[in-house]
Length: 400
Image (tube, rainbow, N blue to C red; front, side, top):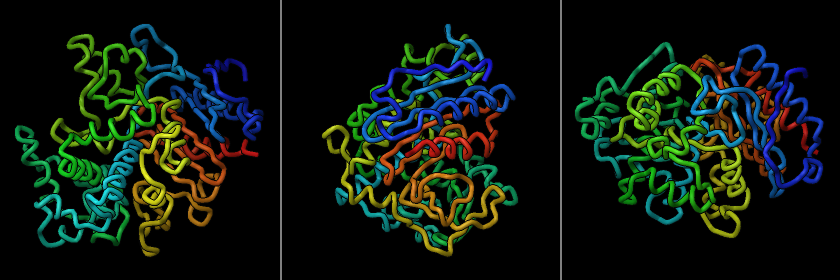
């Protein structure tokens, strides 16, 4: 395609050496470039790993503005994982479960005493992991019943009032009966992590998952280093506002807690900054039964809960206007199966997670394959099947 400017970082293997048709990468690049040309997205990047080797680490497109000398999105550009952050939180909870510190069916009220009231005392840790707790939905998920739990919180006493605010907002479904993508279930899991370990949840995840997986540059945005900032993806209006603030107050502008959370609320629903190259290391660990290059992070029995449906057959997805699709959800990640997924042509039983549609992480056990890609939408509420699901179909089409 004319005008296509592909940046390719050095890889560990050629596509054909790991059983991948390199011709499909040209199709993928054309697909991404066309969306950039149409101004659907600002940039696209992907990192693909198979059979122990990275064979593609590619970027196309630009940042939303020149950022400390950079204009192009490069393969080493940091992008915010958004809700893909929840994968780390789920793995951390599974680690505590295999250590006997907690269990998936345990009532949340045994860790968070405020939940020991009617209706709430029936919510379990597994309900939080699978978005079946009935707690307040993410804004936009159930437009007919919009609730913003943080409006019931005292911003001058966040640490004391955020959990009572969640309870005051009430439930939108009975625990275990509905799949409601929650705005607050994963911060509550972060609170449980903190009470169980005596450490900040973010620090526990950094020590127990990031570093053992050699994800040395992956970090929580609140912990950004000055030298990393030129590598940040500037993608939308919020990012542009942060750049303007940066010119006034420096690094502090770029290290605010992610999404709507405050310092006292665990950033375990979103807020991790990473690159495709580092994220495929997490996928490698998941495919190597919890080991990364010989170092144990978690056991394969605990990880098996990610690939096993943890919700009942009666649980359906009515979120975002969906037509009551059956939900297949592991203990922290959706499972794409041929019986439930009509949106993308990928292998059966692939675990994955999206981050606001702009970042996707997929792990395919059958094909020993990991894919991480991002498509930066200019608008934060942007989402397109073509950018998200169709991209996955093209990526999987190259597997031999």
